[in-house]
Length: 112
Image 1: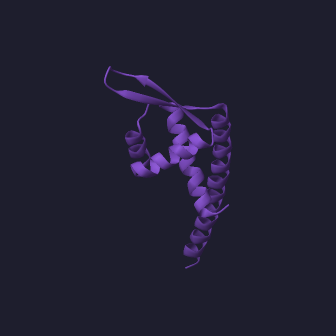
Image 2 (image 1 turned 90 degrees about the vertical axis):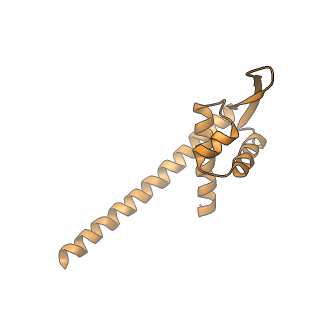
Image 3 (image 1 turned 120 degrees about the horizontal axis):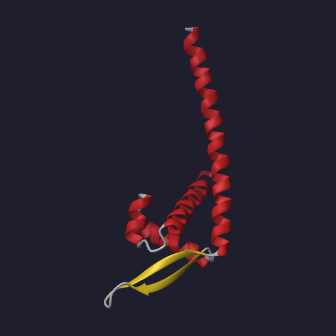
């Protein structure tokens, strides 16, 4: 898996997790939570909507404003689980490699 693909997966996982826990979050708050631009957030949401992983429902919170709830579809829930599994596998591999490197550095430091 390429680094760009991993970042893409990680961003989608973060978005799916946030939408699952806070379905009525607006795009600006979502962008702030993700630490990315509003444009990138909009692009990501549209990609998830196009893939059928998220659906958008609107509801009125007042007579003047229209808000949306972003709901994970059954496919979105399955994709979130798959992304979580891949993310956990990758992070575990990174952890193991880092742990091995730390042990090597400790040994080198002890030898000097």
